[in-house]
Length: 354
Image 1 (tube, one colour):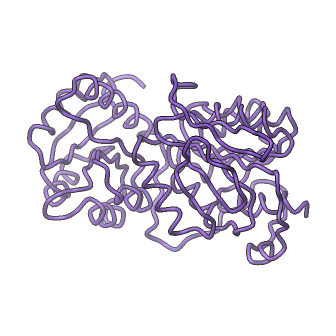
Image 2 (cartoon, helix red, strand yellow; image 1 turned 90 degrees about the horizontal axis):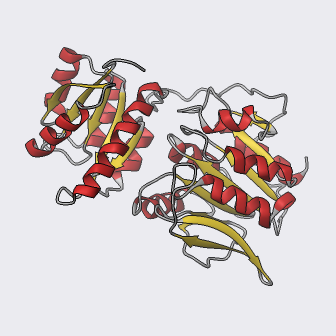
């Protein structure tokens, strides 16, 4: 990208924060702040007038909360939104309603935190500018199959699922992954082998995300704690500031969660998870790589495949950002590529060897 080609409208009720954000974003050669708005009502007028490419939006706003605003926006004027929010469970509802991604609001008194926040926000604005806008305002359409695999209806295969012990399912995702992972996990029965998920997400939000999934899914979902055992019917989400690795002892599989340097640009890293699964479980595992920018997880998935694991990649059409799955597919790490709506079917079919 060259020139100021990403037009951004900042929506926040704090004058100080709006000004700080505008001054910082305007320093980026690719980003142009075309205006600011004090609340969603003000923003609707500014959107029509300024025609921005991206909105930055706080979830907690006066006159109309951010979630209500996004739902209204996606009907009247669909566009890309990057949430800038303090820890609030509504973030995940906003992502479900069409927001592309989110950044945790910084501690304004910490210069280091501010600089990290600015770097992350700029990156996510640039990712959002090339991401696919996905809304849930219309009737859901069935995605066509991209591979020559016969899909068995979920209710049909769920009744046939055998209890498979000593199997590990590893999932990695980034931008758009909160919804993609949810689509898969909510279709899985309680008998499913243990699942490990690394989703690029800030510390604190991973706990809220796990709690949200736990309320929606048949299986148990929780944020992983160092030493947690891997069990059938349980999905463990990597904590937002720790790498999660699969380990094994005389009793079976468990996870280690520890802080560390970023790997493939991230902590937690999908590559770290996948590499540990390749080493520890090998052919007794399934690797699934979902939507996200960059290449985190691609080499790890390749290593899983080399040890005999079954590997699945999300297809381009159903990805918000076809980055991580594309790199994995291009290097030969993906055995089957499919729409996210079909991945649960494919997984269960593989486990049952149908």
